[in-house]
Length: 131
Image 1: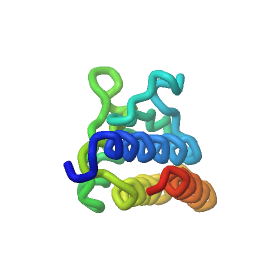
Image 2 (image 1 turned 90 degrees about the horizontal axis):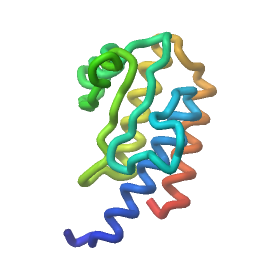
Image 3 (image 1 turned 60 degrees about the horizontal axis):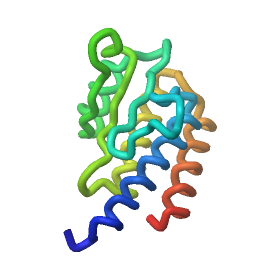
Image 4 (image 1 turned 120 degrees about the vertical axis):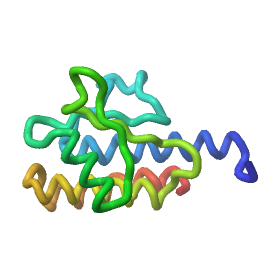
């Protein structure tokens, strides 16, 4: 723990905010809607009607080597959960967002402009947070 607990908590908070901001820019609905109830360690979002969580999680794993969790029960085909713990930092946030954006683009769920804007938002959030 060379980094120290306060810096680790700050890094997780900044990375979570970068995820939330970018996912919103991609047009995905964040769970929960109210910001004050959102977690810094598990980022959840609805996949929408155009693509299901199986497609996203399977392609993230097979094409990007990124493991995510789907929703549970009645939400298992409509929700993705991202872990934001441990050593996750700028590189992992950008790589995960690249994978998600690539999948959404390939399935024509989003435009390249929307993907580009999401990266700009994430990058600014990470830079503003010192990462």
